[in-house]
Every structure is written in C-alpha cells, then in structure tokens.
Length: 346
Ligand code: MRU
Image (cartoon, rainbow, N blue to C red):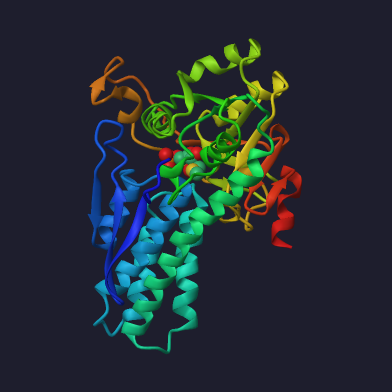
C-alpha cells in the first residue's frame, strides 16, 4: 500500500521548514517529490495540480500559510501579511472547500495567538499544519472502516477520478474505502474510469491500486452504463470536493452522469468524504462555484492536439450530483443519508 505521505512538512527548525509533495503531474511515468519553499510556489503547485484532490490541497493551503509566516517573520505587518497570503492561496482553486477550511483553521490559530511574538505564532502555525496533516490519514482510515461495510463480498466497485492516497495525505477517501474493504476481502475488484480531461483515473488511480495488488480494470468514461447494464458493477464510490448541507455533492466532472446511470440500474452510489468537505455555509449545490479550466486540457492528450484547431471548448472541472441520487455519504463519523448530513453541524 502507498504508505508514503503525498504531502508533508519538512522541519528545519521549530519556526522554519518547507512543504514536500509528490509531483502528480508526472505520474505514473515518474515518481518524484518536489520541495516547495514559498507561499507563491504553493499557490502555483495547487493551480498547476502538482498537488490535487480536495484534502491534499487543503493541507497544501495550511503549509502555504505557515510559509507565509516564515516569509514575514521579521515584518511589522506580520498578521496582515499572513492574512493576505491566506487569501492569495485560497484563490488558487475555487471548488474544493477543504482548501478554504484548512486555511481558516490556520487563521483561527493566528487570531487566538495574535498577541504573541512573530516567532511564536510561526511555530504555532507550523505545528497546526503538521497536526492537520497527520489527522488527515486517521480520518481517511475511519472513512475506510465505515465504508468497507457497504462493499459486498466479492464486489466489483466502480470509481471515478482519483480519491486515493494521492488526493489526500494518505490512504484516500473513496480508495480508502476500497483499501479497507480489500484488507478484509481480497476478492473485490475495481473498475476505474479514466476521467478525461486530465485522466486522474487512468494516471493516478490505476497507479495506486495496481501497486496495492488490487484487481483493477481501466475503462473509458463512456463505458460505465454498458457495464452496469451487464450487472458487472455492484457499487459506485467516489470522493467529493464540496458537499452542501442538503447533501448535493460536487466532484470531478462526470460524477453526475455516473450517479444517474447508477440510479437507473439500481446500483448503490456512495460519496466518501471527511467532514471538512462539507460546507456548512451553503444550503444546496446551486451555490457551489465550479472551476473552469484551460481549453488545452480538452484539446490535447499528452500535449498532442486531438481535435480540429479552433473548435469551441468549455471545460468545467466539476459537476454537482443531486442528493437524491446519492445512497449515502461516508464520513469519519459514519454513513449518513444525504438529507441528514447537516446533523454533523448540530
Ligand atoms: O481536479 P482534481 O484532481 O483536484 O479533482 C479531484 C476530485 O474530484 C476528487 O474526487 C476529490 O477531490 C476528492 S479527493 C479525496
């Protein structure tokens, strides 16, 4: 199992260090870690998807705020500079609420300790980033444990995008459920959607699962209904980037289509996500901002043009699956019916 952390804080001293992460743009051909030493580079790493996946970019954001403190440790405007850095990093990608959540966890530390010295505050921000980093793995293992109960013996599980160790600090959410189920039942199998346009399923999910020895079949995104009709899929599990209080869930583009197909074929469809992916400030999926990404992600594969030059392109990176299509939301606190997820905030 992929035991190394996808992203981790490397300590130089109590009030100095940097972020080390797997460069996910190179996988599966090359496994390389990069050291990110400034808040600006954290912004770029999130934007260019060196680090991606909702929980992983949350931790990158927390590291970025710590780097902002290190950069401004001698500044007289220390508090304001950190707040500006937080705002800047938070603008790198709009849909995954974990980024906003983790940055806010850092801003709470800042607020609670603003009377302390710059050095003490920097130390506390680093400590908090490392705490969030370590908690992420524990949370995913709990999601895995709860979720493994919904995977029938010998099941074939369909997943979309990459909600694995690479999308988190470790273990994964949807792939965490698959991993935990696999530890109990070695006969389960996985069908992985390739997930155009950026191919996170093909490049990252198959990389993770085949390394773990889990029987994995890669399919293109337009094949899932075919296999559902043939009774070859028993359950669907995916991650999420933002969940509204009514259970509507944003995830990688194509998830909605998958949920419609699953409903039509009476196949259970589960979202797997930590509480930090639920946005208590929005009532429904209508309010979720969907990131639009570059045309090149659609017009090219591995930098080669695959369509007529100049054709119109729209590239929404996420879609929202309505709560009524979701069988359950698997969290570290257990499995909730989508219309009961708000209870986590009561
Ligand atoms: O654009 P990405 O690769 O960041 O999108 C990732 C997803 O949609 C994941 O399914 C989601 O972040 C959940 S990750 C545990």
